[in-house]
Structures are given as C-alpha cells and as structure tokens.
Image 1 (cartoon, rainbow, N blue to C red):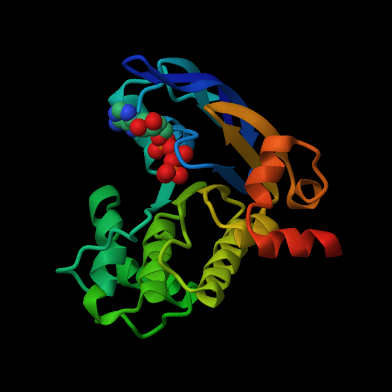
Image 2 (cartoon, rainbow, N blue to C red; image 1 turned 90 degrees about the vertical axis):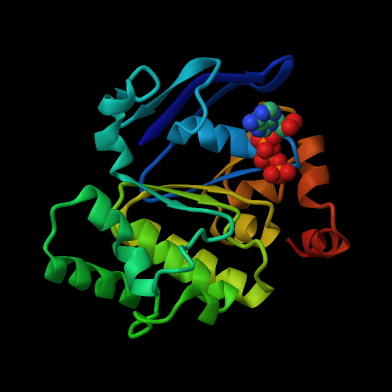
Length: 250
Ligand SMILES: Nc1ncnc2c1ncn2[C@@H]1O[C@H](COP(=O)(O)OP(=O)(O)OP(=O)(O)O)[C@@H](O)[C@H]1O
C-alpha cells in the first residue's frame, strides 16, 4: 500500500498541491483525474521521488520514502515499474533489449534468466515472438504493450502509469486499460494511473482521486462517480455530450 499524507508542493509562488492525503491499495486500479493543471503529474512525481514535496510524506508499505536519502530509496525504487506517456522506449534497442534493460541495471540474473523473463513478459502482453523488432516497426498500441512488458520485468509491487491512452484509438485504449487491470489483479500491484480518459475512469476506476486546483476534491469508485452531486466533478466527468447522454441511461 502507498500512503500519501498531507502533500504540499509549490514551485516558487505557485502552490500546486495543497495538502493531498490518500491511500492507494494493492490489487486496485487507483486513478488520479482532474482538469489540465490540477496537479496530477506533480502528485505522481512526488510519489515516485522525481519531485520532493514541499511538505508532507509518502509511505511505501509503512516505510517513509520521503525522509529517506538516495541510497535508502534504492530498494523501494527497484520495486517500482513505470509506464511513461510516450512509452519511452529506446529506439536503438530491440523489443527484447528494451525489456531486459532494467534487469541489466538492477539484477545479477544470468543471460538465460533474463531472456526467460523477457519472454514471459512479452507473452503476458500478447507480443510473444516480437523480440527482435525495433520500436520504429511497432504501432502505438504495441509500443505501449512493450512499455508495460518493461515496466513489469522487475516484478514490481508498485506500478505507475502516466496517461496510458494518449495517442491511441478507443479500441486500443480499452485493450491497454484491460491489460493494466489484469496485471494489477494477477500480480496484486499497487497501480496508480494518471488519466484524462473517461472510458478508463468508467471501465477500470476501482479507486478514483479527483484533483481540483491542487486539492483532493472527491474520492470514490467508478460506480459512485456516475451519481455524484459534486459540481466540479460533474462538470469534469460529463463535459462531453456523449457522457451527458450516457448519464441519462445510468
Ligand atoms: N517543474 C516545474 N516547475 C514549475 N512549475 C511546474 C513544474 N511542473 C509543474 N508545474 C506547474 O504545476 C501546475 C500543475 O502541473 P501538472 O503537470 O501537475 O498538471 P496536470 O494536472 O498533470 O496537467 P495536464 O493534465 O495538463 O498534464 C502547472 O501550473 C505547472 O505549470
């Protein structure tokens, strides 16, 4: 479990996060949503240590990550998998080399063990046999799946995903969401996803945090969100005509 306690983050005079407290549980898809500039990415970066919070704490399974120095954080970092918005694959490496990259950095595994792990991960994302392709030979959806395979190569306890659906068509987006959700279930990862995508919210939102102007404005599940009377959340969720029409049927 990840606990975020009273996180504040300012950049100069810009107070971006204003006291966010939340728990993210294992085996759940924890979604952070909110309009542009509400602080979603800043919160994600504070949780993984890419930003230091101005105040407040982040705990990984009760261990205070925020108060640790670089060296102390290494064991927790090794248990973190990340899928970045643009998949962030290395273009000069094959699919297999991309997946093995973290294993080379962080483990003493033999070459055979690394290849076995790469093949297991590729199978898990339905890309078995694509080992020797280069990223330029892959579609956007396939790149995301390779990104997921790399993110799970270290068998992470914690999985962070930034905008998994950006640049994907609706059908592929749903496949990627379902894959992330299955992995969360199968490996009981604590998964934290930043998203704008209302299909994701409705489809896989076990636990949703809605940020508004840097504050936690609402928290609940996808079942609850459809019936909320929170004005700002309603405006966000039902901004499109399609969602307004869908609400009539809920
Ligand atoms: N490194 C930084 N230095 C200064 N200001 C920053 C930095 N990172 C983010 N900000 C500011 O923090 C605010 C929130 O940005 P953030 O990227 O967290 O929002 P977001 O909700 O993820 O937005 P979007 O949905 O558009 O990605 C913005 O005003 C942004 O300018």
